[in-house]
Length: 288
Length: 317
Image 1 (tube, rainbow over the protein chains, first blue to last red):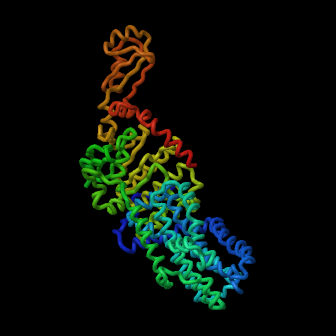
Image 2 (cartoon, chains in turn green, cyan):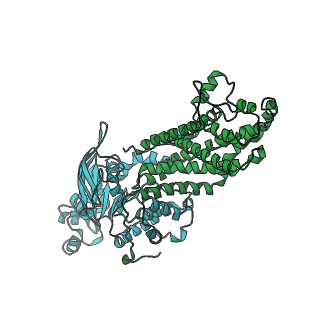
Image 3 (cartoon, each protein chain N blue to C red):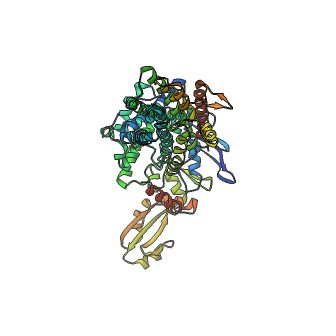
């Protein structure tokens, strides 16, 4: 064992809190999530299986049924933006869930006793989840040519920005849910209950035209809808299809007969994300 | 300035008053042992000192900062090693420490030298790249101690630093703690269930049902509960007993309670007049101290709540 002489002791004075230090804290929380994901590539890849299954298996299979109504458009092309959006769902939720894991295995305590704002830690978690989910989105995006979506640099940037916004909101949503949960099993069950309804009610897999009234109302209450729609719009802007087909496949989302513009939809997603994050932060700030 | 200063500290959880007005201080550089049966209010007190819980009355200052109004300052100046591991086992030892350094905003140029220093101190430098999940219980505890020291805290809180470790590892942990005291100007505040370990402390506080029942050096505490016990065997017990009016015959031999056993025994040999074949002196232990102040042995006090905790720990594996 090596010993150090007392004279060599580096007395480290920890500086007072500044914005720069909070930024460092956010960065290291994100970095940790990235390292963990990088080390667990199996999970990263397996989280992509379900969306790809939906796209290629369900999309190809049902495509033979829907040929008449989608016109010349492949069902897979229609589903692609929806799959891109919902592929972030599981990953974002899993990132939020990891904080419960941290709580159960003690590491959360190490983070919560540090002289940094709790908000930095929670924000770091949300950004980490969003980054990982966006990276997965990029992989899904790479499959665009396989489903006849022409990619351009502009489209990639737009889609990635939208996917990042969506996954940030979803991670924040997850964090707000798990804030008071102490057991991983509980969260696992909860996620199972939430994930499929959220994606089924988002318009990711079917157009929002001619829906039964109850379903069209439910879809409008799902925040995910307001991310799926702009993402699909961005993709459809690049497709060569007739206005009639387009109107049937991506009808505008309406509130009491008013067409909700895309920017407002994205703003809505961002607002929901920020308020959910604020809720999560408040939950984690509670001191015994 | 005292390292820890506690004045009239109170904490209630609804109806239940866990801490009922506690006063004490810990001097800088001291190794301070904090003992008490489960449910004595010991953990609550520590939680308050570490800013993890809010007091409902009184005040506490740690490293010169108020735990309620200067929470971040307190956190910056204390190191914490919890009973349960708080390491990320999927990260390497070095990554765990780096995470800590970033979170505590250590000046960048100090991170690497300090990391090397603390990891060498606990003898884990050659394992810095291994993932923590490959570590034994003792190695994890050592790593936690190293991490707790990363940001050069003024006060290091060790909650049961050796619980669940084998005797050899326990001894080595204590070696690190002693070494630490020599190398760093640091105050150590620790809890333990092992009475023999409490001997390592400069002073000991015993808490029971929310109050401090004893606070002194181990030697003074032992002296306060009784005298040395001298046990002898002789060729002729009957005659010896006649000459020693205060002695009692037991299975082990004749027992005499005296103030200072070491001084008494040579005199006894000279004056008894009966051949002594065997002699032993036993000092009051901290176990006796604990028993006398709390009415329980520390093992009894631990048993009931200890088992479920153990089971939970096993179930988690």
